[in-house]
Image 1 (cartoon, rainbow, N blue to C red):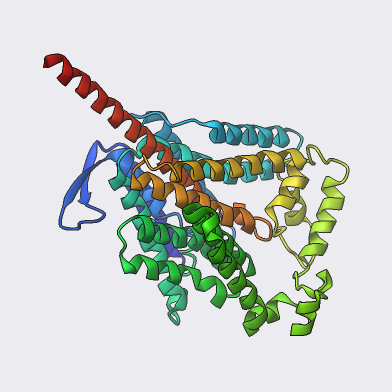
Image 2: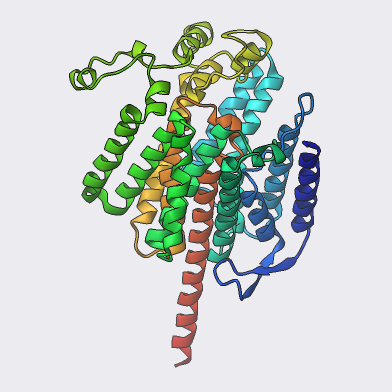
Length: 444
């Protein structure tokens, strides 16, 4: 059945190539389906790329179609950045990201296996290119809505297929793994909430937000449960600041209750039966938590690659090289902690730079969201990017979020890029209005 993934890959790639060299095209308005709207080729390309990031299109072992798809998408984004009529928007956070990427390149120079280093670099490069491409091409709210709603539609199809018996086998490998899907749903949940509270006030958006929050609980994915909780907490803090404390405490309490009182979650969370008395007395130890050997694996990797190279690590890709070529911990090939991999590959410097960039985006989007002069589209992008990024950054602590960057990190960074592009369009329009006012005044 996976031959269909090759067909999908060829169709999407050829469609992207067509859009890249197309002057313009007509599509339905993202809100009013009775209307038609003209998009230029790069706007169509952006909508296609952002809408289909949840499609993995994996192939049988021995042919890494996902890696080829990632490379093709990066080429499309780079082409768009270089040849789009508008220049990409640079700010402090994008500059910090460039420093991080340069640090990874330096790490490749002393990596024991540079090919693995290049693979790691490309996974971090993709969200950056998505950010730049979005900031260059998105100047109209219609483009932002078309891309965002397109991505949400694909995610809704993915949710539906995930819960329909036997449907999953019919589309094997089309969508990303369950863990990647659940992390993608964090951004889709926040986007739906933002559309409800700051946009159209359609009840369907509120229901969609709930739908995207449910799978991580039903699938008992602790990482995405924690990520969704933090994203929701951040979302309400953006909106209500200190007045959000009661809601925030309620969300956190709900998360804690789900851990201790939902049997499937409690069983996966702990190695032994936990009583209410133990919870009240604080007698839950680290040994009581079921880590699936994560703690031992992290200790092993840190002792081997980080302890003696704390500043710069042992080279970009050293962890993947070691885990792919040595059967450790039952043949695990990923560390289930992107921060541990950063420490081992590129040292504490890498973690500091990356978190500085991430927290910088959160602070920037918070500032933009609370600036009432900006349009609702800009503010929706801001709260979606900042809140979802907070949750996704948390998932990096116990999952391989970077490995799925096409479906995970690309979405908060994509919304951030669209925010930057919409701000540039807003400022340009305001400048034109000012010029028109001056011209009209001079003719009086």
